View (tube, rainbow, N blue to C red):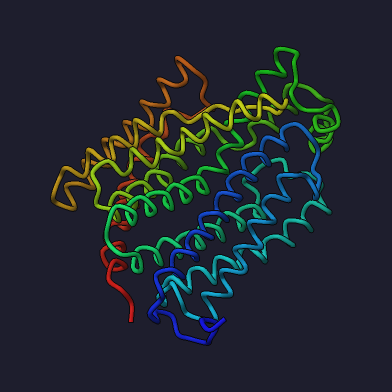
Length: 354
């Protein structure tokens, strides 16, 4: 209680308190990841349920986040001004998105896609929130191995939040194949709702619209621009040569662990984005180029090749969502711009704010 006093962001934070705050952030993000992973699988089997177990797990994580946000806002401990603003805006956006999403479901029933506007607000709010925590840890943690490891882990949470909407396609490609085989994973009422939304019987078109509702190019462009820009930011922030590969490997390893756990209790499974490993390795290789603008050009070429080459290999030997190979020039241009912005803005934000 002696620490509970009004203060401005950037005030000196006792080391023990700093560790407690960021340990709590990591715990909250772990609950978010577990709940989100179960939630998307749940919605490929059952109709929506507000009190479903994955939603309850997310609720506990959200309660921790709200408490931490209040602490940072009131006391100013553990954050500078930029980190505090990002956390406040992120948490506020997330909390506004929750009732909007509930209203949307009350009016329209189950969202057919993870790419809906109300869901987008949840992802955007979480992204700002995690960015604020990354900023707070970056400027406040003492130099050393722990700082680098936790920073990479936080970027792993950032990557998971960005890739999460694409899990719709990763589950959808498996679910559609199961329906074609005559072994649907979804309960009949869920398929009937998806068909009714189109005014059709439960047929191939209705199931395909439920399982893969967005254009094929969305998957590859989102991963090739947004996902790779996050890995570029992780590599630039830590300065460690294999950061991008390790962050992607950690995310893929988590997906490999959660896959059999969900399958073991009878929930649908998804394609795992193994292609991220090749693309992330290309990010790390590009940072061997010392000149910024040359690195952006070489990196965009290498990483785009890694994304689309990795998707081609995964589609040939395992299973991958539809990804539109013709979209690679758009991914190349978008990634080049995003890469340059990430590095230029990152250099500016690496300086502590007043």
